[in-house]
Picture 1 (cartoon, rainbow, N blue to C red):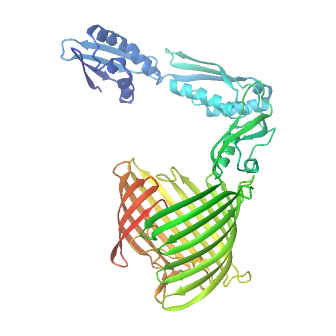
Picture 2: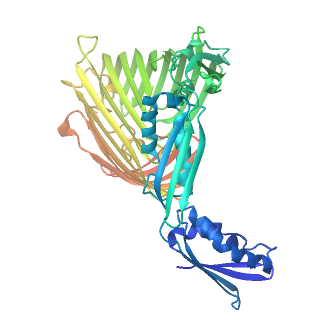
Length: 569
């Protein structure tokens, strides 16, 4: 196939025609010198003739990067045509293949045969150009870098390439490769050195250190240490490094440089959504209580339907990655005819490892519940709960690919300060599937159940209601549940499903269609899934996705507008 490329230089008008397999057209069109000189006002006839004569060699050089070292090129020029037409017929031929690859090492690695043989086996297995593969220049450069990197990140940070050679035989179309690496000395970690601490105790850094003095050097350990420190709220910036001077490889000091955050902070926030109405919050934090690095947090939330005050005292994360805390709270809610006032306290242990967050929590709470049109009651429970969450999304603020899965299991017993025996389980999953460059599918599901003789005596936050912006659209917030007198209260069972298709019209603006289904009930036979569906607008705001949805609730035969900001995992 061919393509005509017009060019208009000062007094010159010519076209280049390339007859080449489509797979290599873009490479030549973009990089051929004769093409890149198009529209250059200084181009004259002599220079154009020179470019034409050099074009075959230019083509050979470019095709060699793709493994073709013996292409057949026929060039012709039609000077009588207006514009002048230059034609190149290119037959790349068979690509050059790797016939042999030799890899050897020098330095300290050579002195430890077991480690050497194991590492060489790993390098050969991961080598990008094994015998029989097509030899490409870019792959050759990448393969050398990857082999060297394998030494640099594990025990040998002063490794270097001693020699590398690729010998290509154009006649046999075979390449022979050789690479010699010098590992340099084997490094080991030494003592911890910390700089930049003024407000906080050194124990905050020391307890998160995964590196033992005398351990073999590993770049992954430095990165893990840095990530742990960055995951705290104590530091604005963190740098973890080790000097890799080959003259001093033993007991290399681990250097930690930090820039601290202020120890106290007062924050304010306002917002609005169709679920909670207008809301505001005041948050106070002290990151260095009693100069022990203990973190105190107090959060006051004022919403149309909910008012709460939460306080928490959190200890620094320990060397095993656990975060321990104690908390107290008071919360009042008034939703769909049910008013509840909860007061409680608890202890919690959380551990985050990679994409997994696990929490074990014990909590005692009392609740006074008032029902419109019925008598109120008091409840209390001492609960033990385990929460496990796995995050695997490409972007936590604007996820487009991946999934989030969360599971909870907890319960209480009458023998332990509770009004009812119960076991509660709950799972939630969200899946993001990109469909092309501008479209995406979001699937969401929730299942919950409480095993108990009845819901009597169980605090309301351990029962289930649904409906609203983040669950079943087309219905008011938490309006799907158990009807009791003139109110809607929680039930023992929950099922919710959702499918949403998003199409992004621009980088920040998009549209959506969705279908939601769900219900909450106190018995499985009474779990009647209702449907909601509609259209929505999307905007990628600086604080997260802004969603404006118009949904039709089929069970209530009414349209409802939903507005929310942020991602609900």
